[in-house]
Length: 367
Ligand SMILES: [Zn+2]
Image (cartoon, rainbow, N blue to C red; front, side):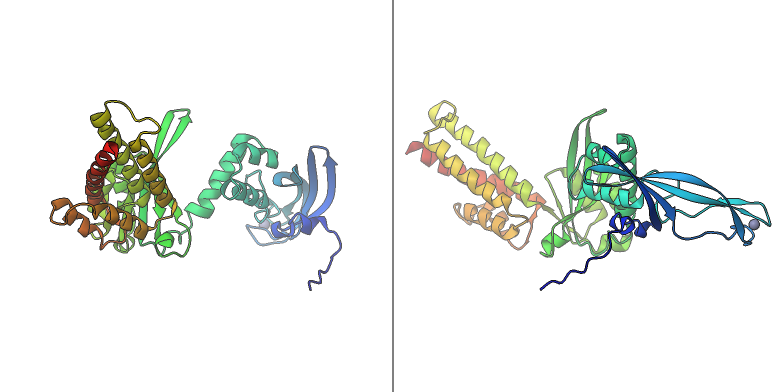
C-alpha cells in the first residue's frame, strides 16, 4: 500500500524554482500568461575584486521564460539585488547563473522542457516557442545551443563505439533548396542487442570527402576500435571507410540490402513480363501475384531491426536454387561467415537473386 504524504502547497517547489536557486514571492495570473515574481535565495555580498563586503544598493529585474504549466506560458520576474563595494566602489549583481546562463532569456527549467519537447516528444519549434511565450527564432536558437551543450559537447558520447553506420539524409524545402547531410549512427547497441542505435553525428553535404574528413577527425584510438562500418551502396562512403578505417569490415546495412533486392525483383519481373506476354503486368497475371508474395516477404524481413541472420538465410534460400559449381554461388558462400553482408558482395547477391527469380518468373508466367 502506498501512503503518500502531502505537503503544504508551495509555488516554489511546484514550479521547481528551488532547483534554480530562486524562491517565489508573488504571482500574477492572466488568461494567457502567468508571471511568477521571484527572489534569488543566496545572498552575494562579497566584492568580486577586493573581497570586502558590499552594501545593497538597489534592485533590477530579469525576465526569464520558464516551462509552461497547463498550456499557459510562465514567465519568471526575478528581482536581482545590486551591491556596491564600500571599499573599491565596484558594483555587481546577485549571481543568477543557477537560474539561467548569462544574457539568456530562458530559464534552465524552460530550456530543459524545450529540449525534451523537441527530442523526446517531437514537438515543433513553433509549439515550443508558444509554450515558452518567446519568438520562434529565440526558441530555435536556445534549443540548438542547449542541444549542442548537452548532447554534442558531451565528451562521453563517442565511448564504447565498435560499429558505426553511415547514410545520407535530405531535408527538402529549405530556403536554399534541398540540403543533404551525412548521418553517422552508433550501431553498437543494436549489434550487441543492448538497446536501440543512436545518432552520433551529422555533417553537411554528402560525398566521400565529407565522411573521410569526419573519420580523420576522430582520435586514432577510437578509429582502431571500429570493427564494422554499415552503409548503403554509395561507393564514396566505402572508399572513405577503406582509407580511414582499413581494419574495419565494410558492410551493406540490411535496410539497403532489402530495398535493393526489392527493386531488383521489380526490374526482373518487368523484363520477364515484357519478354513473355508483350505487355505490362496486370492484376491476375501469375507473375504479378508471385511478385506481391515475394515483396511482402521482403518487406516483412526488412521490418526486423538489423536481423542479419534472417537476411542471410533469405539470401541463402534464394541462392540454393542455383548450382553450387557456378561462380556466383561460390561468391554467396563467402557472405555467410559474416554476420553482416559485406558491401561488395551484396551487389553480387542481387545478381544471383535476380538470376534465380528470372528463372522462377519465366516458369510462373508460362503456367
Ligand atoms: Zn571591492
